[in-house]
Length: 154
Image 1: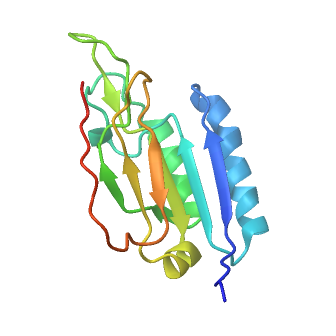
Image 2: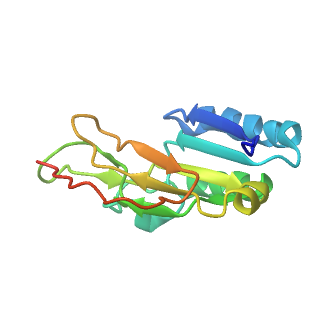
């Protein structure tokens, strides 16, 4: 018999402007009541960093936006899913002086998710032609077999 697991998945995209992102924070708070005691994962390009070290350049650090994001995460009682792979998940793709990289993409999970899917993790892969890294969420542990050889040409 197959063990069926039910969970909520939210995939969202944060607005570029902090004032517009406040609507997302309010929506997440509202959704928290709807989800209730079910496992919940939110995967997103939140378009905001949580900490100052999540940006390669110290210029244009918006402490207010960061605080609002962290307050929302606390309010909805979520934590970041264990992460592997690249630290910075977005880059402006500039080569020299104007280069900036940030950690904008992440997966947040509630305590029910952590209890139900104890082996889950998120991996940020190489960005390829896009400015964001693709995220892969694995729910169950890898069970055997050889790890395939991978080569990233960049």
